[in-house]
Length: 571
Image (cartoon, rainbow, N blue to C red; front, top):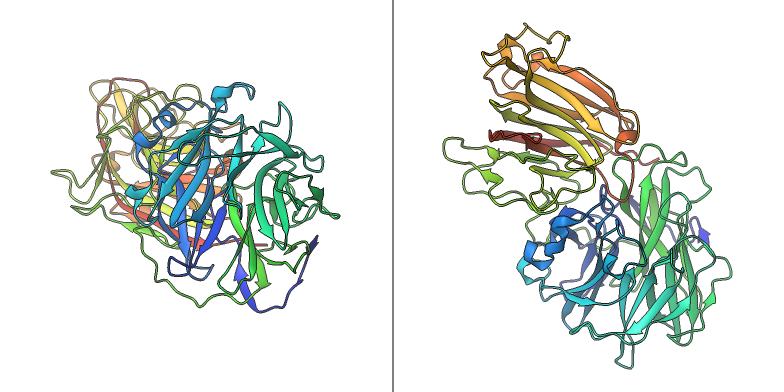
């Protein structure tokens, strides 16, 4: 049952609590760790993977690390094929002074019946604030995903999971040894209510019942949360009489796709739920930040079913814990922007994100002769790579950060002097290899464009090549086709400023100009963010450098990285 205002109106808070690319949330409260809440998110092909956020008050969330932070933990991530591959939903638990994180590395290009498609794994940590404490994975066999451990009162440990639904839809369970990965026989305990793809299961023990909560309907606008319960962990399970218990399907709400929920209590034993949601409205067209994490209060009386409040942008619910930002960890709070100067001796911030593993030597902070810059050596492959899905072991020279605001401005200085045909460096709105929008400085033939430059015309070099400003992209929807623009003479050999601005909730503006003369900034393109509203992930904004398949080796030097949050749309 979903209600509105079903509990006392004791506090007000805003959704999403983890804006931007933070899907499939799993959140817990750990009193032993200074009464802290922890949330894990899926990450697909992004690296570092499986971000962990912490909060003392359910409102101020800080990135404290990533469970997947070393290539040697999971080397197969380097060669996943397809943008929907990689790390799927995690489950985070704390038991016997140990944090357990269970997830699945999925090769989504392989058939569901191919056993090698599903690599189910367990990570452990004694200290989630120390990235190096996350273990090498223990692997276990299961033909499916969305795995979730459960410790029963008799000491037995179970794994509940979603079977590959295209083979047969169902939630299965087996005993497991989390130290070795050995499992008992898998058995089906519920098939859901008939919705598409029953998945995302979690089991909770309360008042003599085992409550099984799952997601159904697929992760689009029909997404929903359903429940069943039993007096035996192995069933039979009786469905909730009024499923779904939580959904915004068939509503006009701006918050859609609500599902894949998790229940937890705070220090006052009040119940809360997190779920994924997409800020798209029912049209489901413009949602560049993808699936985000939302919070809602839950009323759960003894021996009864839990009652969830409907998810909205502004919520009223249980009294919140006392506001606090006293949290360890190197990452930023989720609402913070960036002002990064790449000073000598510094490292890239914890929230900076690559697409799969970065090739060693690609990124250097403050290299000799170029203080306060980030040097990016080019990859042979560009952001689309081999076919929009695969990049091979060499990878791509790209680094970015999540778009976490409806409205923002991202800008960066670029020093780049290409000498070989098709050498390119610039900025990008990157969702996946087959969905991105790029603005770059590129060396092309002097006959590449009839379009006049935004200043004095540039003259071609002795080689017959000249630098151009080029906007292009990759998507399943229409992208503006803009001919390359010759770089003006007056801009040559100068540091340029590249800028991406979300001017409203549907469009990006791409601009460029001399870094020392902001009034000369020129708008090159305006693009609908529908081009990067797709799939399982959310937009990253960042920088790249590539030879576009050629022999070029010229690096780009980036400086004055700025990401300014400028507003959230919540209704």
